[in-house]
Length: 65
Image (cartoon, rainbow, N blue to C red; front, side, top):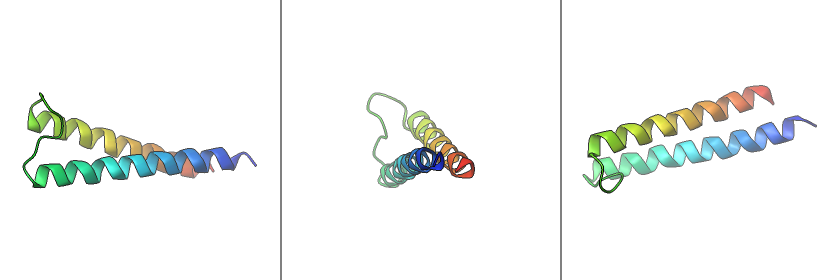
């Protein structure tokens, strides 16, 4: 019964991380800024790290379920 919250949180983190990485990839490929007022390289790198971290956290939650 305790695996329900872990599966829910893992799904949320995985969807967020995947969505953030997909969005970042599309913006970079089109040559558009990922965040306004920030260096393109820095914003793309930070968004990629955050997306990868969210995916890793989601996978970790799935191992706890």
